[in-house]
Length: 121
Image 1 (tube, rainbow, N blue to C red):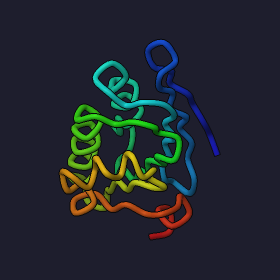
Image 2: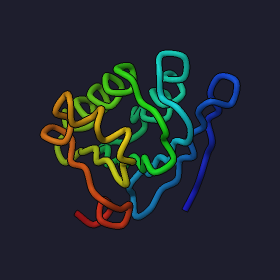
Image 3: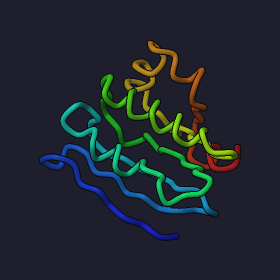
Image 4: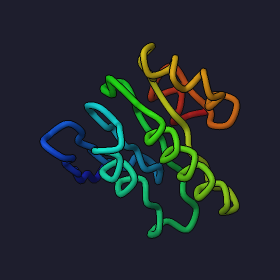
């Protein structure tokens, strides 16, 4: 398992990136909004992956606005544009899930109750 960390503006968002069995796992912590979104966008960039398989573990994300939703949708489109690529969300907290539900994200990007389930789905 390898890891890197990206820090957001004023410590409001950090993203730890690891790899498990060829799957990139991102663990953002904090708020995802128009001030911090670039941190998540940069971490999601899969330019170095021939077949991007990415899980975003959202258990430590306390808030997400439309910026975060757009970032996740763009990452999903990028990942699925490659044969065999995918993006999955894991352990989404209720306050964030409410936002995702309003715009129908769970119908587009698979959401799993735990990181382990997202990794093995």
